[in-house]
Image 1 (cartoon, rainbow, N blue to C red):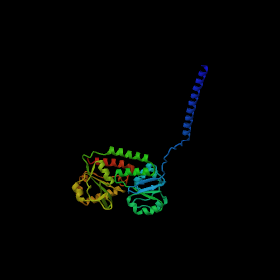
Image 2 (cartoon, helix red, strand yellow):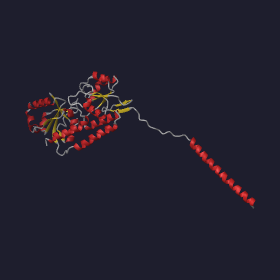
Image 3 (cartoon, one colour):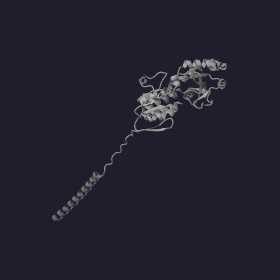
Image 4 (tube, rainbow, N blue to C red):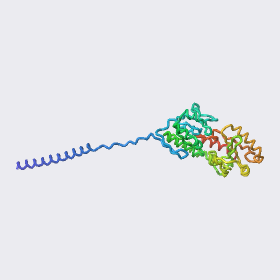
Length: 326
């Protein structure tokens, strides 16, 4: 009886040991499999140093890295560049106030009279210019400088330029901040258009006067400020599609409540010359704008050129001017 009991216990122990051995083997095999399994490396996407932008002419331009330096022939572009902290090595000629941080930057001329010697001297990675500069672009690019084109015929154009500069210098967050500020201020400033002020916008230099159309920056600002452009259907100038020749007959017929003069420089001289021009045609004297003294000169640094981020200041000035005629 005892012998049978001992045999039974021995068999039970053998079964238990066999089970443990099998379990151990499985655990080891499992551990070995985990150990031998190749570890998948985490893919870290590195930001490419190259930059790709599309300018206002629709031209797609690629740079291997963020441009080291930039020069511009436009004061509005200069204003945006300074706000983004770009390394500006050439700035336009200016008859108005110059930002303190721009005073030491070499002057390279203006869109109508670029100083090619100075541009070559500062040798920027990028030169910013208007569409009219295309005729000179090949010579500049031969020197290793890439030319990008900008335009400012509306607030939207200026904001698009800010976005492009943000991409060009990898300052997207800063550019978004500038655009948000402009959008917020414009939305606040947009006037009630229920009773628009009939307005004639005149771009002038002594001896030359053109009507600014709605597709110009000043025309865009006028509409947003609550004005009605009486020259909206005047035929466009072939070389300057944002402007039209003055039609004295139509102006007298539409009788503007406000006349606004836009000039690049010497505003008083332009106003005096324009008043002399009006005196030659007695019909001008009967315009409501003239009879009520609503002939104003718009600040040249805001309206005679692209104001850049200060476009909201230009909109406020336009609103205040129109308010005098209401």
